[in-house]
Amino acid sequence: MVLPIKVLGISASIRHGNSEYLLRIALESAKNVAPNLVSTEMYSMAGKIISPCIHCLACIDHRKCILQDDFDELMNKWLEADAIIYSVPVFHLGLPAHFKAFIDRLGQTLFAMYQERPPRFMKVIGVISQGTDLGGGEELTAIQIISHALVMGNIPIAGDAPESYIAAIGWTKRSPLPDAVDRLRNEGDYDANVLIKAAESLGRRVAYLALIIKNGAYVLKDLLANDPGYGWYLDKIKSMKG
Image 1 (cartoon, rainbow, N blue to C red):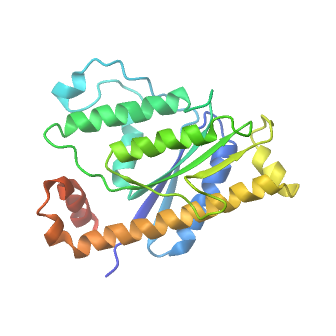
Image 2 (cartoon, helix red, strand yellow):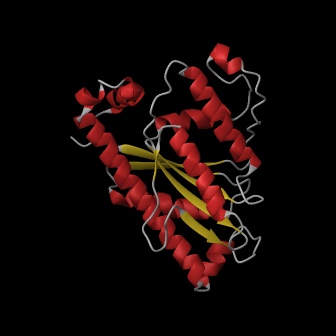
């Protein structure tokens, strides 16, 4: 028996544009690895309200965030998934504020929920980062998300070189249009095609590694049970298997 996986794609853009376009390419590539084993879902942050953490520390007492907005919906999807692909536009050389608010509150809430020992969530994390200018913060943005993945006990992965080294990274050649990448692709632009190939290989590698990790953990479940850090992940596998 081979356990299936779910890949969640999160578009961190406030609009329906280039980030979603690239994310759909990556998710389709992930699905094509094994259509009977890989399911995908895309979540767009466009139109969503996720307020910043106010450091009230109520999560320490209540084991959940007390702010009432769209955070819980996305957190629950994040917890359910076996892999996450983040597609993020660059804002001022880094993460958009609304997306940074999500990962801030995700970390605070889950660390508060599991105060005794934060679990190893063991999600495979892939990153797509695109901006308007070449060298305008795309790598910095990707590194921020990779750091977030490591802090949360996850496994970051890139696509295949030479298109991708730490993430699928590209630019829109100073175009602010929401369909800039698609326009450049149709024009035969070299950089746009490299970015699309990087998104495709990122999706494939995320799916393959998530299948390896989940099924490997199931085979080694008795061994991993000796380490409490894997408890949450093993419980998740047992509840989803078959």
